[in-house]
Amino acid sequence: MTHPSEVRPRILSAAGALPPHRIGQEEVKEFARGMFGATHRDIERLTPIFDNAHVENRNFCVPLEWFSQDHTFPEKNDLYVENALNLSEKAARRALDRAGAEPSDVGAIFFVSTTGFSTPSLDSKLIFRLGLSKHTRRVPVWGLGCAAGAAGLARAADHARAYPGELVLLVGVELSGLTFQRNDRSKSNLISTSLFADGASAVLLGGGGFSGGPEVLGSRSTTWPQTEDVMGWELVETGLKVRLSKSVPTIVREKLREDVAGACHSLGLDFADLDHFLLHPGGAKVLDAFEEVLGLSSGELHLARGVLRDCGNMSSVTVLFILERFLAAGEFAEGDLGVLSAMGPGFSAEHVLFRC
Image (tube, rainbow, N blue to C red):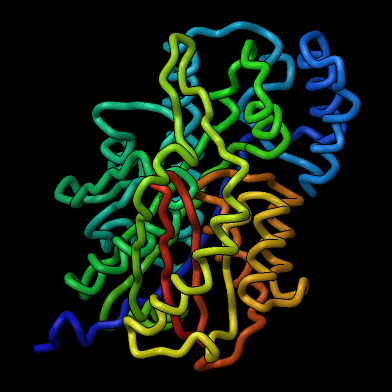
């Protein structure tokens, strides 16, 4: 009998889904100019934020006009439940189809999201929409923000390692647009308006007996003390209000390399042997900080920059979109080592090490 520690789960497929309303950055910049201009007399000095974000287009589950109106928290959350469920189903079906897998083979579903609320969690509805067994194990995870995609992949791989005869489905969905606070004139909200977007992604993993796809070697989680105010939500009457510190690139420069190296060391690997870096693009400045501290050339993060350009920052699912493009491009050799990483509220980091 194979011991769980000897099982190396494989990433069998990854697939994303975007909502229907695609909005260009120039449109959003003009919208922000009108909204923030009334309280920021220096708005023309601030609007270059939209150019420097390196985002060209984003998708939302509501049209641009929706953001110019007031909405209650229950109204926003109803939209979250409806649209998150539909997008999650699309992404999950695509992941199953790409792997040629049957829904009945799925033994567990991990569901990550931080931009809305539902009890029971949406995975309970996905089980029956997708045709999964009523005995499918459900593991919903809330509150990890941008780090949840990497954390979800790590926890799903742990489950696949423990139950090698079953498939494990990871589903992430974030509708960041629905958290927009029209009356918040803070710079944090302006920055968020230039970056965040909506999307869903699904990843299918298998333990022993499944072929194809990179092997997940292991993972590491880190939460740094006295950093809980760096990123998160404030719950206000109109919903979730973003809290975002400008210190994130500084934290990346101070802590990330040592943390990734530690993750490698914990698995008997060497940082210098990493061939691929799939890193969540919190923003253009964060990507610049990644390159600087990890000693990477700009071309090495082209997948992350491409997803940021085409889709914006979709919080937790962004790194899973990067994973999807990585698998589709096939720009790797057998035996290559890689790391998939994301940072998020806590302040925390999640690293997943894999071998192609």
